[in-house]
Length: 500
Image (cartoon, rainbow, N blue to C red; front, side):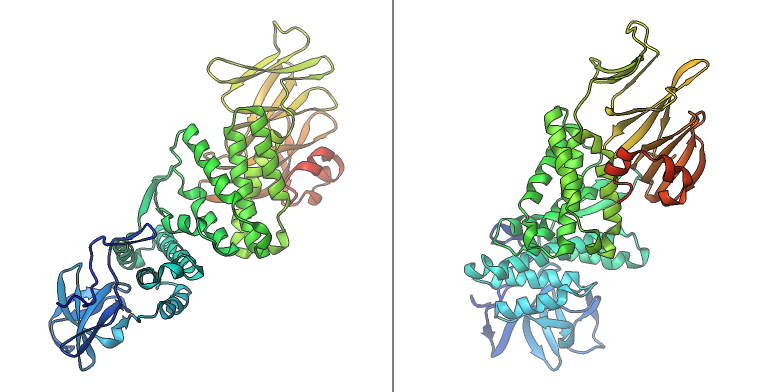
């Protein structure tokens, strides 16, 4: 082989801008051998037959997958003679089943733009992006073309992972082949164990990190930041300290995106992610000032959203963000350690184990009427006493994004505490909150919203029995319940995100 001969190899020899494309070195410079043009090519069709001779009746050597890189050594009739360095095998492939890579990087970029739009052609797009990175000059790589190629590389890699996570058995073979092709180009994926036993596959985001380090367009920066801060690709079993560090890093990544230059729907996506990340930080940070600042930033980002500019695909994210931010909204209020309601006094104290203990007294701290401890957050600022003085509602948050309602109720046997969760399922994401007292001391108004066990429970507005906390009436809109029209709490109506 002459020194100018085109090579397509499986060794990790391509290192451009730190991007390791372990599958191939795609040198598309023209060369010649025995008067025949040589070059590199990408397989265009899945399960393309590599045969032992330039005819369809020749023995099958291997089945190739779209996006695989091959060296073109010769041609005969309507076939190319190719060599597959990964399989260490040569053969003949129909010309209609291979895309001959041009020498001009701009042509490669134009082809990449077209392929990027086609669902199912992700592996081919990876090959085109790799070819561009190999053939472009340093100036092109550091310019708009290099940013576009890396953006496409990350987007296509992420789409392959998303398709794999769908678990469609009819596409298992194709998905496995696409992942194999992606691995040849040096793309790495991580497996995340989910609480329900599933394993989630996530792209590690190397290309997106490089996009953020370059002078990219606003939309490319937004796409990269959103991909790097996906909540479903964080380890649910991580320690709280590690999760706080990750959330702080996610907040920093999102802060570098200039939302002013974005289209409204992209701006909404970035703001929703910012609001959700800041809400997570507000729960993780134990220092009051830091937690309050994060909660206020979360509410400010959510308030900047434009609901009329939400894309249909973003509706689920909109609901999840609202639940996460609403669950933490009391963190934005001043931290209180005690409250007084006439003769009744409520106080919070910390235990050496890290619990917060709520005590209710009638003036004699030595003999509390009720005491309850929790490792979660108890938001004393949310406490509300009804007109009859026989019930108190207070927000308590045992987990990030999951806020419960504690109802302290006085009966003939004294005070007791009941816990009302957002939904009767394994904790996920959601809230239930006090919305008003009904005169008479027997009923309370609440609003609920949750996503648990993979299902979204619609927003409901309910009238509950104080004694049993059973739902007496409910509706999807507050104006459909007469009790809500008459007795909803003005502060709840003003501050809650349940009425978004």
